[in-house]
Length: 219
Image 1 (cartoon, rainbow, N blue to C red):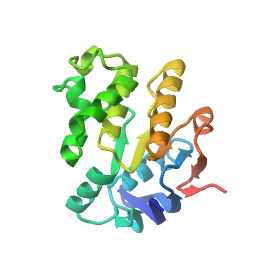
Image 2 (image 1 turned 30 degrees about the vertical axis):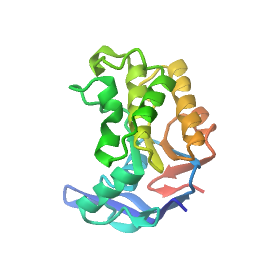
Image 3 (image 1 turned 90 degrees about the vertical axis):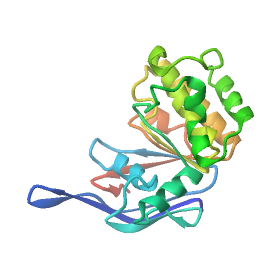
Image 4 (image 1 turned 60 degrees about the vertical axis):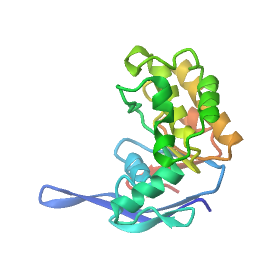
């Protein structure tokens, strides 16, 4: 199993007490599978995604990716595993404004030491960005920026893509096009995809769907 999250809890201190955001979540994801994570705002979807990506650590429980502990308390170890195994697509794109499209696409791959110029060029072409490689993010539409963000995540050839509402800032037509491209490429490359979404239509085109409710997986 590529991803295995076991009995994951996450609490935050708030005022004089603590807030339990996740209360024992377990899930798994095989190589090449796609999984939609749904639920109301505040149900813990983004928190779980951040824990799986090693951007934070659980209060209790464990998360393994390719057998390695992503919930390790060491920031350095989590960052190293994230660079090698995980690509993250944020709703707000999070492109580097001082880098052009070509440099943004190759950025994560350069950090991971897996840069492949031909693969980056292929991704740019597939995403319809070949005529914008010298442009900077501020000159792009929202749909184009999201395509750059997706290409950047895929460029490092990760085993797992985590996507947090990747179409949330796009109109429906653009959203469907972007999601179709993401699914097409992840399936071709046997890359696992875990996507947070509010859209049941978008969730329905993925292999599996899970719903978080009150910090637990709804049954």
